[in-house]
Length: 315
Image 1 (cartoon, one colour):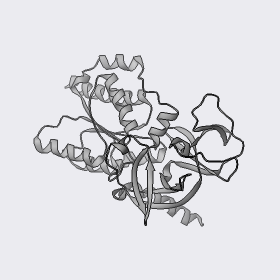
Image 2 (cartoon, one colour; image 1 turned 180 degrees about the horizontal axis):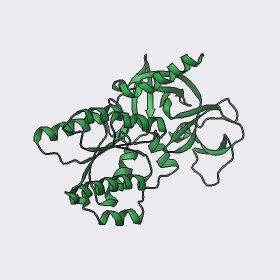
Image 3 (cartoon, helix red, strand yellow; image 1 turned 180 degrees about the vertical axis):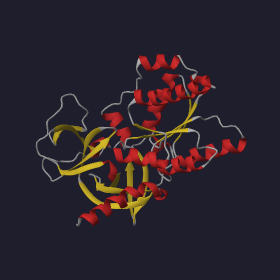
Image 4 (cartoon, helix red, strand yellow; image 1 turned 120 degrees about the vertical axis):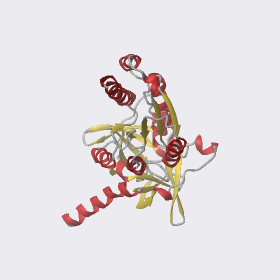
C-alpha cells in the first residue's frame, strides 16, 4: 500500500467517529460463534506463543502472562471467561488480540480472527431482558445473515481481574468542603459494570446522579427536562462506545443545542488513546477521563464544582 493510500485509510477510520459509525474486528471462540471488538481498542494481533508464564492463584480464565514488546501482559481466555470450553492454545494455532483498556494493556486469547466490518451504531442492537442484563453480552449486530455478539469487556475485566472503586480520603474530604449537594450528574454507559463504578464514585462524594444505559435515552431525558422548564443536571458523564448512538454523536448533539451547551460534559471511556481524546475535544466535550480510575472521576467532578463555586463567589 502506498503512503497516500495508507494515510487515506487511517483518516477514513478516524472519521468514522464523527458519523456514528465504527469498524470492528470479528473473531471466533470455541463455540463457533462470531464476536466483535472495536478496532480502536486493538493494538496488535499475534499468534499465541506456546510459552505462557503461569500466575499462581489467578482466575482460571487467566492463562498467565506473555511477553509483548518487552512487557508482561495478562493472557485472558475469552472462551473460558464466558463459561465455554477453553482454547487449546498449546496444541492448536490460536491468536491474541492485544488491546488497550483504560491505559492498561491486556491480551485476549481467541480461536481465530475473522474479518473487519464497518457498522453504524444504529445497526448495533442492545438486547432487552434480565437474562442479557446479567450476562457478558452488551449488544448484537449482523454481518449479512451472521449474528455478531459484542461483549461487555469492562464487566469481564472487572469480574476476572478486579476493579478498584474506592476514592481516596483526600477526595472525599475535598468534597465535604464544597456545596456538592447542589450538583446533579447525568451519566450514561451501556456497560452495567461501568455504571456501577460511576455510581460508587458518585456515592462516595455524596453526589446526586441519574444513570442511563443508552445515549438516546439520555438525550430524550435532557430534551424532556428542557420542555418542562426544569433542568436538574449540571454535569454529564458519557461513554463513547454504545449501541444506537455513540458518545461522540451524543456529545455533538448536546453541544449543538444552545440550551444544553453550557452543561459540563465529560467523556468517560476505555478508549483512552490520544486520538480519541482529540476527537472528544473536536466534538465539544469539556473533559476526557479514562475508565476504571475512580480518583480521576472524582477529580473531574470536584474540579468542575470548584470552578462553578469560584464563579459564584466572584459574582
